[in-house]
Length: 196
Image: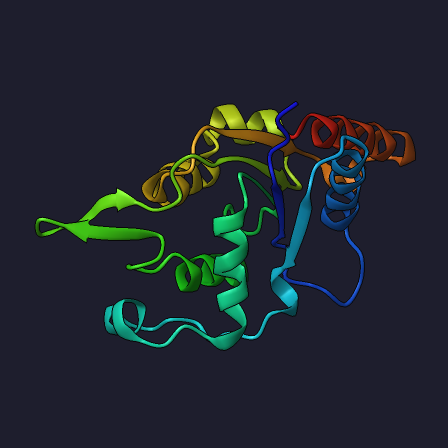
């Protein structure tokens, strides 16, 4: 049986204490290991990198030393799962800064015949985006049209060749009781067991 290699990217910017995002990622990892999948993890909050401030840095500046192994993990992975909380309607700035650093020209995409975006280097990989939020998930999905998650899927992941991308939106997290959390953790284990 074919078993894709899985990379979990924890995008919660607070590594000082556990959050729901960490519990969800742990449950997914537990399911993936039970399913016999190879697994690697990245905790963005534990990495050391600067925010890019201009196009020259993005195109020609040096990659922070600690992010070379991240790029290696992305090339190794066949299925990538992102976990992050929705902050001010979008992913946290640290996660966005991480993606800007990692998804650089020459790595995430390469030019040919004068077109800088013709070769998407991460084609052949799938992803899941797991997002927690204070508002009800249905409000985010249908009223706000999940705009920031769609932007991540289209303008970042799709741009570098990652598709399909599935979503898990977990809303009203401040109102979840112990049974609700247990239900979500069970769902994450099931997704991990199937590597989807």
